[in-house]
Image (cartoon, rainbow, N blue to C red; front, side, top):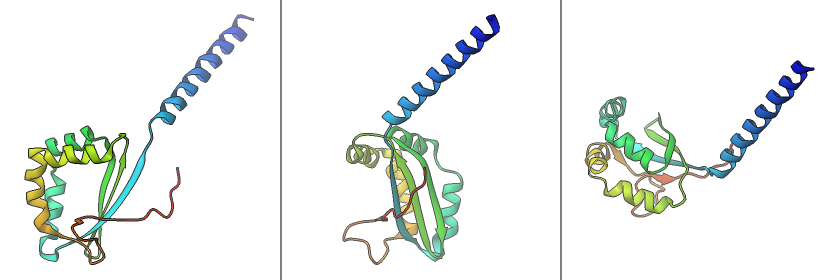
Length: 136
């Protein structure tokens, strides 16, 4: 009988823990973003080298601006950027990042390696991509 009670208590604790975790996950909304830009052929290796050793301050600012799971991929002269945003004011967080002195210095190194894709809107550096499929 005592063993049965212990099992029931453990089951109750596990169920509570799982439901609490599910509630936490529900509350944190994630918005996915994908962008594309061209990389200059003569600057590709420089760009890769910069990102092989990113500045810790730049990584910290990305996290401070509610960005997670950030990746940049390369293929055939294009860079594809993917990130997940967990904040509640994307424009404010992007303005915060754009005003950060270390991020500005980083962009001064990376921007000369890039050029907008032909289809980018006027004044847009990284062009938005449309998400056509996602699996959770």
